[in-house]
Length: 236
Length: 305
Image 1 (spheres, rainbow over the protein chains, first blue to last red):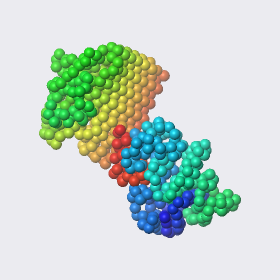
Image 2: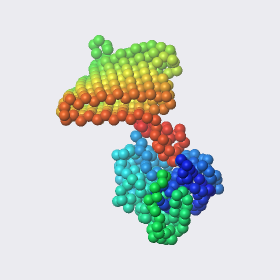
Image 3: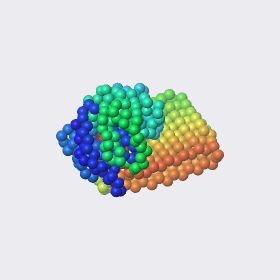
Image 4: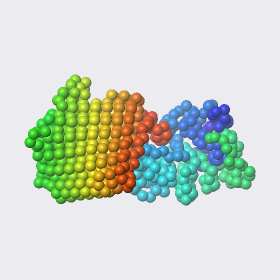
């Protein structure tokens, strides 16, 4: 179980996250959605430790992790797929998967991990993780590095960002698979209806506050049939 | 050969050298072992300044090892090695210098290598430099490589200098004729107060000649590196120079690009990027459970791989 207690985060006199309280349960697939600038990505980064909250606590399986670093949280079982996958010079997809798992794995094992994200050619293992790969390919590899660790909490920060619609449609299948097989907590930041349709629960964040949480059917109705200004223009 | 010699040799030659087909071992300025075969001949220069390696025409494949080891402190070893690569032949040449200096005097090795590639020949040249020893005497290497490439020839050069060389001045000069290709990859890591200076000059004289130069370097602590590349395109030709450097601590790197197109169809590109390890790279690896030091090591190892 992951619990956020009264998390506040303010930058340049602007409340990005305003007293966030949230409990996430095992085996559930959550989607956080909301207008641009509502604080979604910041919330995800605070859970991973990339950003530190000004106040509040994060409790993971009974342990206060608020002051733990990113790598300490990773070793406790929290994984994070970045919105913009990072490029590396000289590091191949195979190298990165080995670093993800934390020990030497065979090329076959690495290939099996790539398979989970819909990459079906072994040639990718030798490719460098750089801009010679397309946005969609980099995104899949990013997700693979996170899945390779079998995390207890998996956070995906806007998986749809930076990839074309066609790539995203096929990526949705990866999330369906995660939803049906994961025993941990899955948390996806997304605007996409396709992703919302997979969620067990949807969390609506507006102006740094959680304005509604509920199961998928009820929330989709709220989001798509009521007036929510999805273009609220704050800086996230 | 004693244990120090063997260890030095092992740093620059992976295999057991005496089991290899063709080799010449030079220790403290003198040849201590040599083997030729019917296709590749190694001959001492008459004036004793070095060797000539002759590769016969149409040699399908051969590997030549020419390591140099220096264990005598205070020695300045200058050697001229010339490689004559016959038409249509294909060889791998592995050279390098291992210096062990336990004393206070400087040990210097200046290796001048000249390559003459005949038509359609192919050479892969690998150069490894390594220095060790507890003394305060400096380990200094000044390799000079000259390359003359005839029509259709192809050469790749891999240079690695990872540890322990206090000062290196590397000069490479190449002249390429029609349809010839030169690919150079250089990897250097310096630390302490080490200095590494690299100077490439490539003249693309022939039509469709091309070159690709990649330099990846890491400058740690108070070390200094300088990378100069000077590419001249005289006709329809292609060149791509890429210089990437990672800085740590107080390391300094200077890149001086010079590309000179003397023909409307010369296509010359130079890219250079110098900076510390990107924060997002560290963050990504830390999110995979590596601590900051481990993440940094993985990034540098990958970069220099």
